[in-house]
Amino acid sequence: MKPARTARHWLLSLFPTSTALVVTFALVIAFILLVGERWVEERRSLLDEVEMQATLVGANVSIALAAGDPQMGNEMLAAMAKAPDIQSTGLYGPEGELFAHYDREKPSTLPQTSPSVGHVFTSGQLLITVPVAYSGVEDIGTLVVVASLDGIYDSMLYFVASLLGTIGVASLLGVMVTGGLRDRMKRAEHDLHLLALYDRVTGLSNRYAFELAIEQTVLRHQRDGGGSALLFIDVDGFKKINDRFGHASGDLVLQEIGRRITYTLRAADVVARLGGDEFGAILVNTSNPADAAHVAENLVREAARPFLMGAASAHIGFSIGIAMLPDDGEAAATLMHHADLAMYHAKSLGKSNYQFFSDTLDNAVRRRLDIEEGLRRAIRDRELSVMYQPQLADPGGVPLGIEALVRWIRPDGSSITPAEFIPVAEESGLIADIGDFVLQQVCDDITALRQRGLAVPTVAINLSGRQFLRRSFAGDMMRTLHASGLTPSDIEIELTESVLMDRLDEYRQIMADLSASGVKIAIDDFGTGYSSLSYLSKLPVSKLKIDQSFVQELPHKASSRSIVTGIISMAHALGLRVVAEGVETEAQAACLLENGCDLLQGFCIGRPMPLKQLAELLPQGGKRA
Ligand code: C2E
Ligand code: CA
Ligand code: CA
Image (tube, rainbow, N blue to C red):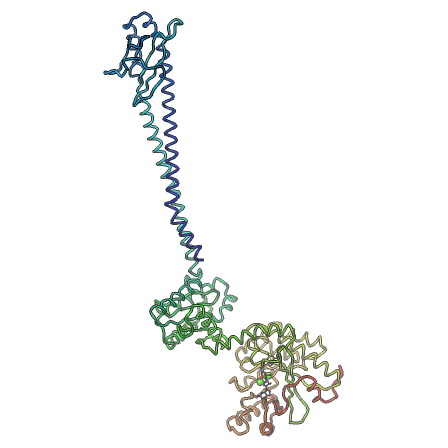
């Protein structure tokens, strides 16, 4: 980039001088050649003309010489007065003595004795000497004609003047044309410059200019000390605006975002659009992280104000990552990388917030990227498997429900928990593949168990919100079940309470469709999402799963005990079954059963286990597939 710009500047700066020099040089050469050629031409034609006159006059005047009559010679020569260029003419005798002559002006310009035959150009004059013959007798004398060169000079002067005039006009035209060209080049250069440094949509600096500004900031820090904050700002929900309102409106929103960022910062700060829905800012002379945090807070607040799109309004958020110079890096590249990591972290924390870079964050993000990469391979190379955890009505009884839990065991034997990789899978879009795999595996396993004559209760599958929202979800699920020869009632879906409450309106229809086709729905992690039970009861839900956090505080913690007993009795009143999750001790199990909990799930009941082990828990008597 840089060298190209320099080269352009160089070319441009050379343009007026070098081109003009070349043009001038060419003009001078052409001028000299033209004038020289014209000079030679003029002289030749004068010579031809005068020579012809001399020959003519010589032939006529020879009679005077032959007659020895100088008077006659003088009179005949006087006729030359009619030729304007002729200054003098002299008739010379055989000995070279002047015999007769004509002079336009005194004193005479004729030599005293005849020069030899031929011609000579002196300053201002052409002197021609021709032999004179009479009646076949050669060389009875000579005739000398002296012509003035004034005529040539005049004509040359005229020629040079008109030539110079032509050159002048041509040069003027040339200057005008090249001047226009130069202006155009300058304008193009200016445009290129703008294009190279500014974002077309928002008019803010672009990524290139932003990187230059960061380098400048780093240099200033090295020279003068002091700190600065680097902010990477990701716009949450911009894609939705683009999809819903179109790109033109999207551009308007981007412009408004740029304005809001700009007026939230100080004039000396730098704001840039880094591309897509990413912006950047440098808070110069900001060494206190608290100041940067304050600015970030203001930015998050600014983003939260709705964007009016005609009658409708759009909502976005900012996920901001902050890296401090010099604490989080003293090189531009490091700072940018760290601000980027912090932004990524902010995004993963649920958006509309800001995060500072930290070393642990670096590790966390690294691990996350590692997981995302590994996950693609895991799906392809079948590193995923499914474990089953039984749900029992009392310890030692038969499973009345089963929860399918996905497992990822890497080729080196290490495992990554779903709590860690499911969120990554959601964000990277890989969750759909994982969901498809789990459902298919569960169908295959149920079929395999039934083929052994075992009674298989409903198997619960966990679904993330993202998966559930896929438009084709219900249809895809039915197709898979049908293809495996299973009925919808063989499967239960677990949705967490918080995911459900987040987008209830969007889920309601899908839930109704699923439930209508016979698929049961359980609310997972109940008690953490602050939803009201009566509200939930209006949804097609058949089961509640009390979150582990309450169960684990049983039986000693009174508040948990009353929450759990409250949930159980209210759920029963609404016709829902209750499962307690994370039952780890017999005391917990006893407490739950005393309070009427329908099913228990947890380590003390049965850990998540492979299919083979699950099969040992299931009674015979199922319908044979
Ligand atoms: P969850 O749905 O709440 O699943 C219960 C989690 O509690 C499981 O963790 C299970 O192994 C663990 N657990 C069971 N009994 C006990 C106990 O007595 N004590 C303790 N401390 N933990 C117990 P897991 O398998 O690591 O799964 C974690 C989460 O990952 C799940 O929470 C679920 O939200 C998600 N998940 C698991 N499998 C899938 C899947 O196939 N698809 C989706 N979308 N999410 C899944
Ligand atoms: Ca679950
Ligand atoms: Ca749970």
